Length: 448
Ligand code: S3P
Image (cartoon, rainbow, N blue to C red; front, side, top):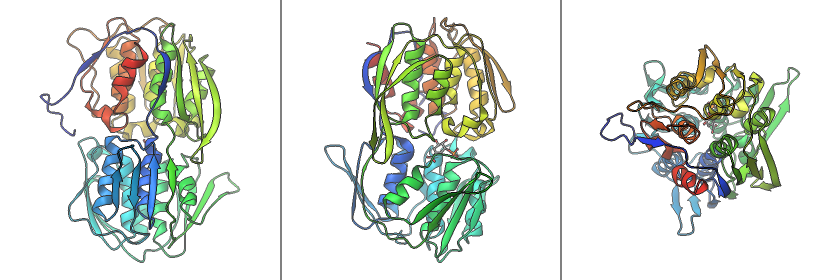
């Protein structure tokens, strides 16, 4: 999927297709799916996972864990069975680990490998090979791992792990759950206590699941409000039965679509609402969106609800930068919502979006402009003047939105397309399979 070769690209024009109605269920959470495979691969015995996201990113993680000794199989009912090697038991992979498009696989697995006595080369597609890895190389080097990276601390890179490693106390310089998780995973096979200090809270799936598998992990709040996370190394993991809740980041596309398209009344079932992930729904409600939580419950230690979403006229707002980490992946689709809102939406504090699968600030500015929206790019966000509920004009004949191998740009602009007059031409729909392989068929089903 890594090619920009026009012959292999799969362009598609997304056009208006009526309201979204009925009930849909989105696939499992990507972050939780990655972690269930990784931690299952460190437990001795069988971990069973239901609702695993079978997207390319998670399959990259599974392939890498197999290459390091775990047995990972899917049965005919869609349940995944992981037989692990035990903490400290990862084996030397015989070939480079292909991370595809997945930053989560790369950074978290770098953490795992760093404290095992093995050497691994990490490679990825054109998008992943542009993303910064220095943020994990720095702390993992302090623990004793050695790296030979491409210029700028990028892939391809080779990591020589060390055992025993040195436990560290590390204050995150960037609000990143991937960096936090890389260090905590490295701490699992390190003697003593590894500490991560998180001044700004990010998604806490690693902490929750590490505890579930039996790691000794504590979270305290420091005087300055930072979260202090400590994990004791040389843990013994007990295999788990894991139920993965639906991915709020995938639900987001359908929630926004139903808000924007007249006549819509849609229930998105089984949406994970971990507070470190769910800020988009709060922001949309502040904009006037009708999003109702039905049947709030607990699935696999994570809060979940069904969301009933009805068409609403949205109003532009200033989005509080404090919520950025809890909706970091949802800004592309929020920008689409803002493009049809009444008045101006201002976003700030989005520097991290420039180093995601693409530079999502500039990619969405260009894409929305092409679709006829009024957008201004700033250093750390976008300012969007909405249409007041009218559909966007859409892209002109022969013009297509550039997705830069970024699934969330492709899906956000697909939703912009169904909320437009002429439709939106997306240059390549292949990246969608990294996180949401059934996106297009669900979209067709919901608008039928
Ligand atoms: C993820 C963390 C986020 C997010 C990514 C998945 C995770 O990245 O953008 O899609 O599973 O930990 P950062 O933690 O680097 O912001």
